[in-house]
Length: 72
Image (tube, rainbow, N blue to C red; front, top):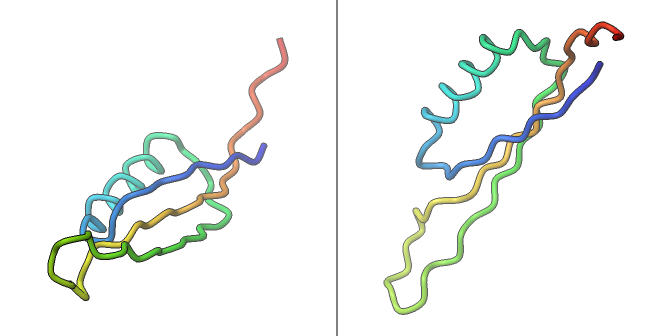
C-alpha cells in the first residue's frame, strides 16, 4: 500500500532533516519509492538589512510503500 509522508524545515537545518528522515525510514521499515523536494526563499524581514543568505523553506514529499495490514 502506497503512502505519503511530508517533511519540512528551513535550509539552515538540513543535517537535522536528513537525520530525521533516516531515523523515520529505519523505524518505519518503509520502502521509499521517491522523494521530491521544493525550496522557497524567504523575503528579507522588513526593517532589517538585506541578507542574500536568508533561510529558505524546504519541503520534502516521500512516497513510500508499506505492507497492507492484515484483514480483520
